[in-house]
Amino acid sequence: VQLQASGGGLVQAGGSLRLSCAASGRFFSINDMGWYHQAPGKQRELVATITIGGRTNYADLVKGRFTISRDNAKSTVSLTMNSLKPEDTAVYYCYARYRGMDYWGRGTQVTVSS
Image 1 (cartoon, one colour):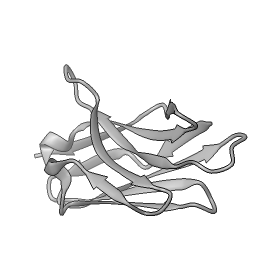
Image 2 (cartoon, one colour):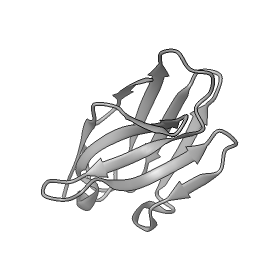
Image 3 (cartoon, one colour):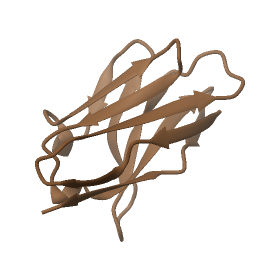
Image 4 (cartoon, one colour):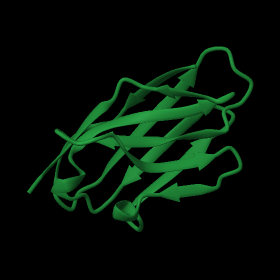
């Protein structure tokens, strides 16, 4: 499974961004997909995940501001980020779990200026 993310960038506090990630390769269906982020000097942390059935899980810090969605037919997952805060600044990584193995995209930088 290969994951290609896009959509990061620089935005002012209070603004919005949308991240997208497409999975490619040889696979039947991916159960879990989602996003993690890693700020400088910190560990990689969960942002949001979504199962193939549409069940979502969000980090407390993003609940009510971020929305995760996926298109199972296209094997894509998206993250709509609203009301962005400077503390959301991080590298965002697309994630997928398939047959018990974790896969990661390269990461896309999100920078929120105050």
